[in-house]
Image (cartoon, rainbow, N blue to C red):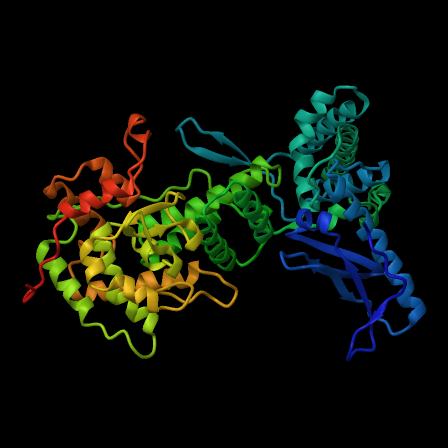
Length: 550
């Protein structure tokens, strides 16, 4: 439902009249990312960017006179309301004949001008080298006249396929420049025919120039100005940030992981800052290559550049192409060369017994009282829980009080994407090893306030940012104790857990269920690993023997 203002508004602290128009909820999502140039008087226009948080279109009408403000508001409304109607029904745009001629005028002005252009021919000499040849003015005039005649034939023909072949790509470029996403069939044919007519006139003008006639072309005056009030979409530019928000909505509907979405958001922000503009249509493959190279020069790991940066651009631009927002994906084909690993230690060896003892002993020395108690509590307990569950660091760092409970006579932790994020997107219950229970972890949980045990969410409730920071701090803590650069400081617990489990003779299927690994075969997907089965497995899993412990 559209909401029309009765009269312009006055803003507090300003004597200038203000235009304010609420964006209907039904169309707001479709307009996110559009950059509008809204006319509201002779020579007057307001630039408005509709972002994710934009609820109303607002700008100054630049007048204190009430009558003049009312006239300017009416002109702005004449531009905006057709835009809202088009966004609401999602139909292809229709062009009037005047608009088609105006659009073709841009082609005429481009092709009829020789400014900045130099026509060059080359030929191969008998010696096999290239030689530059300047065509004669007579040859140029004949060539331009031939092209003009060919264009005139297209105008008179009924060959729609021929028009599409000759002017389809040209028209697409003109439409992209005007922010027009789609035309209905009749409007497209009309526009291509007018483009052919304009091209014929442009080549005739160039032919006259080649003969020495540079008098103003009277036909140049036949093209009207493109009237933005008759086509609201023509003055809109799709912003890359807006494309991301529309992809975001689609990704959420497809239940993509929030951590992936936020990672892509960060990449888009970095990319926009790097290229210096937010116009998705202007992005080139070279922009993406330059961005890749700049990130690598910043010593960002090639794996991160490939998996996070380039993949984010490829996915978002790919979605835009699939949804007719862009003609091509500029990130397609951009690759990152990955270095070959040459390590003396196996990549997935995990912590050795000595390294595990050193790190877990350091955890026991952490003072969990005073300031930053949640972070210190994480340093005290997260590595221990990882050592006895083989869970990912984020899965433990995001635990909440009510995720630790007794079930079927056992203390268990509930690992769930509801708490933040889980790589597989699936919830699982993991039994706590008896050593963790005897060490007092359930008592620590009972004494903790409601909410997350080891981190403090942002005021908005956002968890992923604080979780990322906590994971980094836990990695730094582990690196100080075990500095070997060949080890992933928090992920090595997962490798060690499986190594110890095999040493203890625990079935791989039970280890998969505890660690949250997908079963390797379809048959192994059937059934479930019950709490009792896990409890029996943990009776076999050996306790960590610390120096001086009985």
